[in-house]
Amino acid sequence: MDLTQIHKLPPAEQDAILDGPALPLPPGVSAPNFENPQNSDALAYAAVSICLAVSSLAVLVRFYAKCIRGKKILAEDYTRFLSGPRLSLWLVFNPYTQGVFIGYIYVTYWLLDIIGFFVHQWDVRLRDFWTLLYIIHVGSNFYSVTMLTMKALILREWSRIFVPFGIRNAFWWTCHVVMAINVLFYAIAVFLEDFSCFPYRRIWDKTIPGSQCLDFKVIILTGASINVILDLITLILPQRAIWSLQLSRNKKIGVSLVFAIGVLACGSATSRLVYTVFYFRSDDTAFTLSALSLWLIAEMTCMFIIYAGPAAPKAFAKAEWMGKLKRTLRSWSRTSSNQPTDQTGHSWNKHQVDAVNSRKAYRKIDEFELRTITATAAGESTKGLNRDPDDRIDFGTGIMCTKQFTTAEEYV
Picture 1 (spheres, rainbow, N blue to C red):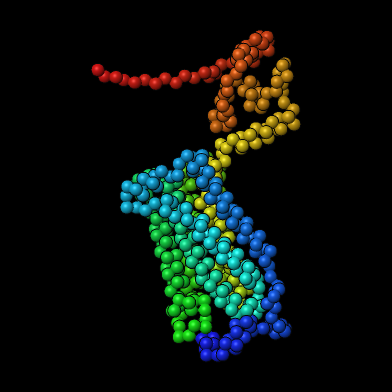
Picture 2 (cartoon, rainbow, N blue to C red):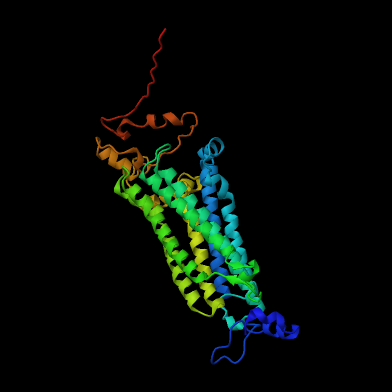
């Protein structure tokens, strides 16, 4: 039956149709199960909750690194926003992007509450299926806005990291061109989503008569393909800049791995493309939507991880609790190993023994942990000087002390 003609039926017949299954029963199924259909709600709740927790943790890590450790929130962004026509993406969008993502999480929980995940469409009432289509519509807008802002923020952050202020090189232009394409792409996606049907309610309520809609299958499949390409470009962009830096190979590998977490986003985007194809090829929309929605959430979560990735080392590198943990582990390792001791019973670590045995061996300062020298009680500073001469360690010749002098010229 043509659902656009349902308004011509008596109210009782309309209710009977709306309370019936949203999809004809397949062979082998005798009756729909509206009350307790087979589902995977537990899996969905766990996956969605984990993604929400991980994305929130990523936001907190970046906030801690920039505001607590760095004691600033990208001051150059405030300057540019206030003094020039260029709009600072960080200042405008960053506080709201997590909120938009939470909006998508909210409608996902709404879907879990009224229908469930991985529920076959013949076990869903037709009137509830209209609510599902409305959730898809709202969630599509949340997804597009989240991806628009997060990808723009990531590209803006990478151009700030790898390009000195005021320089307009190839990397800077590539980032901003990709950023512009990304913004334009997702802005068009939001426009097409909101104006795909006339009147507007036809997007989710298929009983409205005299309406026209765009064929959204081709649009969404094309958009999913472009999304994968944009993710790949975003992944590859910083790698060339990293490997051209004047760093050791090990440090280049470490930095490269930090920025290579974009592989997660590429994997999620590719899986989203695959399940988008399944979604449009299947008549069981309610069932295939579940996997597609989970991959969309995973992709958005990856965007938050990528954005917070460069700030993570700064957040944890010099944290007090990290220092205590390192010292504790080092103390355990020393206790469990047999180390040479002096005549007073004090143990000497490997670096100290090597310094005694190799008098003229010099090491770079970044190979050792720098510790804060604290004040000592009276008499402690000379405690080591009162040892027997035979117990003293002969360090031989070498750099024992350095002085720094500052000179200034004054003309009268």
